[in-house]
Length: 181
Image (cartoon, rainbow, N blue to C red; front, top):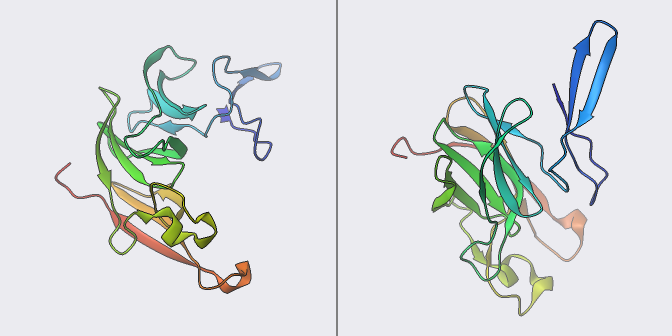
């Protein structure tokens, strides 16, 4: 079993917990600090995780490291963000720090394309977040992402209506990646 404790902004890591005759043993996964929770492949023999801005693909359990992708994206200094999920055996979705979505070829650990959710396409960050006047680059209103069955996903999108947080609303969507990946 994988245990993913988190300490808010800093301190996320992974532990392996194993049930043995004399109790439960817990071992920290040594190479990962400041990590997202893992996303397991459909076969369950490997997982993806973002750690300190890099996407890692490990064998399961306990490694080895199969591949690594640097987190710098083509958009004005944007980096890999907080969510990565297998979409199928060959592809994963990863978010950026600006909450843009990217389709990643898992075997080659390369970004294949950007994915835009209809009605929630990336736009200038200062347009989405007026407090970021002068901010360069694109961002989306994506707040949270979870995989569902098949190539379906659930996403939460923030909708800012005024200056105060209580004036904002979130929108919940379910959607599917196109079959022509």
